[in-house]
Structure formats: structure tokens, C-alpha cells
Length: 524
Image (cartoon, rainbow, N blue to C red; front, side, top):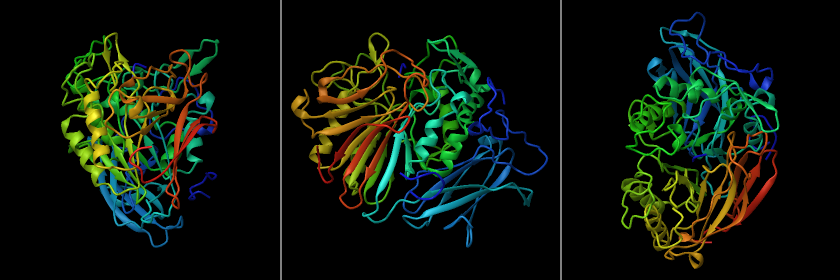
């Protein structure tokens, strides 16, 4: 865009622009630069651990070392690590920016898994660093188990980075205390096109201070700069603590590369020496795959971001990539548009997998909203909607095909979750209000940002008949996190009734809007 229970691990029970004096901002031991390949002592994992794409029987564990090392993961049912199972992972080195992922399989369903990562000297396995611990819960294999997850997006945007005066990314600590089963990050995990200055003066005269790094002093163009942009967020202790407890499902959007980019674009931006968006996107995707554990994406073998993550009988999460396969941003008035925002292959995959899904709820994780008019300049449009409330045109044609498929194939329990616009809202789409009527009603919920500028609400496009019972947004562009709240959404699925409850929350915990949806329906 242009623009539960308490803490603990139990289940529901560098260059600095400012001195990071808060304990919540204790920086990892390595500097922000790439680790030296020859150091004394033992390997260290100061960037923490994280897990991703966790299912009922599997998960991915991530770590970054401060030097070349063998990744070893141990898992157990308790924190004592009695009867631990050992997994021998890869040797991490400079080729992957010293990051590594180990795949875990054959895990027990619906259980709390404790794990620790050890980094060993590849030439002397007896030399290991201090273990780094984490925990996660596998998805249930029985319907009666409740499910809770959170979602949001947009981190370190518009120059609002890690501010030690505020305790850093404190929203992550708030989310961690909700003890979700997982966190869905809906894109804009970094702002590769947004440098982080050391200080910003707010409209009321206050000064916002940022922790800064060399890589975040300019826009990201090289692979090293993209890696540094992903690494920047891990300087925050709140995020590292969150990662050690809450698995993630991650997707990407435009700011992983450049504002409003699309394949084949040549940038009109004087800050860049590399103008080819495809070149920049390839470098970013490699770093993205190095810094997040994603089942379908491997930094050495390519792969894709879109995938379905199955979370037991109650939930399948369909993670879309509305960035990599889209056509060029345009006025969006085409009467025939096979490529659209998803590309033909991804659309076929989504229709097929939705029809195959036997989960009670099918969450469609979209990195951009459907009916909100997001412009790209004076004449072009960035998302699906293009401001014409009439029959589908441009990218709307592809969405119409998908919505028609959901209706005609009787796909029950679809809910759309997204971020991108830097405010929070709820949209209900219904054919009786729409120009295109061949679909069943559905809900779309918007949250974010996590730590970025707030922006005013955009207009609705009437093609698919959206009504907006709730919206909260600032009245001016790029309000800082110190001026307007940051937002995240929460989804609870009751294992007994199957009801799904969506709550839109703001920083501080307040519930702004909630909606209860009933299971087993094609539309509601």
C-alpha cells in the first residue's frame, strides 16, 4: 500500500540511534553485520528461535548462528527434556546467511512440544553453544479441541522502527500473553523500501527514537541489505520471545520489495540503482526464505509462498500470494483478465484445494483486501477493487470466478482475513447489495499495523456488495504508533459448537468489534 492466559511457555495456563536501556530491548549478541566465519569460543544463537507451518504432526524450527555450525534440535514433552528426541539439521553457513531450518515429523497431535536448538562446531561436535529453547503446540486431531490464532501485518513501516522509549515492539508481548496456537502475518514483514532514521520529530514536538542498523539506513537493493532488513526486527526482544512461544504462518506483500511493485516493473525511484523489480524481488524472496520457516519455500530450491496449512479438523488456512503473479497495476477496466492478481495457476490451485478441504472453517489469508479501493498513483489501482461499483472488470473478474466457484461447489465456512491498509475494519459482502450476484455472503476482516504508520480509511467498491459495520482509522496519513493504536485480530473456534468468533483488538487489549459465525454454511 502507498501507505487467554498469562505469560510463560505453558499452554493457556550494531549501530543504535538510541541507547536501548530497556530490558525488553536487550539486543542479540551478534552485531547487525554478517557473522564472522572464524571466531573464538562456541557457536551462539543470539537471534532466537522460531517455528512455522505447524500441523498436527509436523513443524519447522528456525535458528541463526553467529558462525558456521551444525543445527541440532531436541524435542520433548516436558521442559526437563527427559526422553528427548534428537533431530540432526543442516550445517548453516554464509550461503544462507547462517540461518537454518530443521523439519520435524511424526509429532503427537494436540500436544505441547518443548524444543531446544544446539549449534555445534561442524569440525568438533563436542563444542556446542548454549541451547536456545522454545515451545509450540501441534494442531489437534480431534474436533472438540478449541483453536485460537491471531493475525496482523505491517512491521517497521514508514520509518517507525524499534523505539526503546516505548519498549520496542510491545504489541508482540501483548499478543504472546493471549497464548494463541499460531500467528498469521499477512505481509509487509519488512519495509525494504523504507529506511529507519535515528530520530523523527512528531507533530506535537515529541521525538521518536529508533534503534538503527547500517542495512536499514537505505533502501534494500543487494541480498545483504534485504537480509539486514529481515534481521532488523529480530533486534527486538519482544519479537524474539514471541517467536519462541508462538508458531507463525507468514505471507508477503509489496514492502518486502518496493511499494506497490508488480512483476516486470521498472522502478521510477531515484533512491535505487537497481530499477528492475524482478531482480529485487528475487533477492528479497531468497532472504524471506532464509528468515522464515515456510514449508513450500526453500532459499536454495525456490518454491512458492502460497500454500495451505492444515490445523486439524476445525481449520485450514489458505495462504495467498497476491504479489508474485499479478499483472501490472492499471485502471483495471479490462473486460477479460485471466492473470488477475493471483495468476491462473494459483487460482486453479485455490479452487481445487478449497473444494478438497474437509475442515469446518477455511480461512483465506489474503495479503490485500477485496472491496477496499487501494490506489497506485492518480489512475492505477493496487488491489482488486478499482472504484467502479458496476459489473466485475480487471482483477475483479478473477475474484468473481473464485466466489462463483465457492457458491457452486458448496464450499462451507470461508472467512477472509487481511491487513495492508494500516487500519482495522470489518466488511460483509452480500449479493443483494452487489452488481455481481452469483456468490454467497461472506465476511472479510482487516487488521494492522503492528508497528507502522496509520492511514485514513479508503472507499468501498460496490461490485461485490460490501457493507462496513465497523472501521477505525486515523484522520490523517502516517500517524506514528505513539499517536494512534496498533491493531491485531483474534480468532477463536469453539471445539464443541464449531462457532468461530472474530475479535478486532487494539494495542492495550481493548476489543473494538466482534462477530460470531456459525459453522457448516456456504454463506452468512
